[in-house]
Length: 242
Image (tube, rainbow, N blue to C red; front, side, top):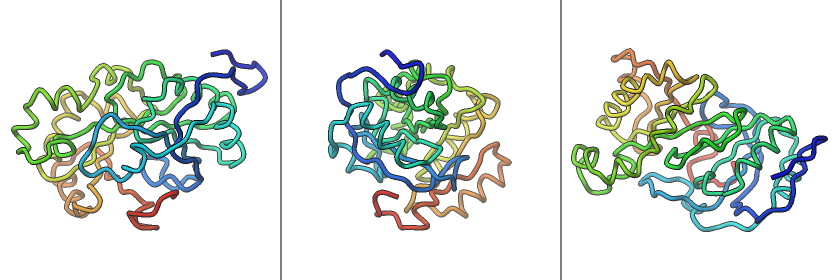
């Protein structure tokens, strides 16, 4: 990909599959409350039981990088969130991210972490969602699925842990107490609080009481942040484009 030194113009490439582009406030993470342009891409390589954007599995249309850049520029928001689905399934996502950085945007990617992230430009803030056994286990017991080969093949591309820096965030969406204990053990085993800016523990919504999770964090003095999805409290869980 070639870039114009004077701006974020890019050469023509194969189109990207875009589900929606909209402006709202960022609802979670350390940027919660900030005005943000969301670029949601179509397709995902996993199926979490609690997924709240299943419409992005298939819905969407082709757009070129220049078309996406023009829409983002027109919104006027200083922050851009690349999300999905799974945005890393888009072959040219690193080129789009670099073009957005070149335009002066603060760029964040929300990714499930199951695909390699080394092609992302250094300036992109990674919010990596590490999938818990509860996210993927279906009808199997937590303990059985956590020990299974299938879970270890699907929940994370572990070399991504070495790419995390002090600007990044790691998120766990928790379904129950077993998920909480698994996520806390994973956090401590991989020394995440020393590697990233924040470790986020999110209660599945709906399904887990935030005060219950807050109590566990306080009791264990866990080095994590409680992470709530503000947009769901403001607009409800089923509203799109917010």
